[in-house]
Length: 54
Image (cartoon, rainbow, N blue to C red):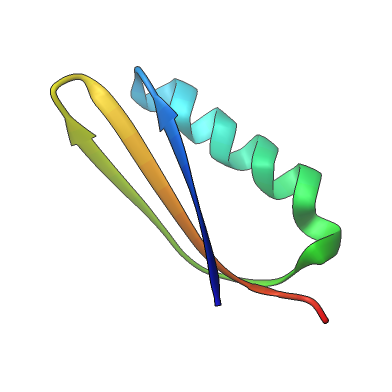
């Protein structure tokens, strides 16, 4: 399993960044295990957990 984190400054921005990352990397992703969003002091952090294709 691998993880990637993305930082943004509003919820719609971070969601679009997550979608963009997934689309750009879909050929190397076997399965998305989880996407976790955290907001703290106006900053948003998304952590994508995925299984990479071999």
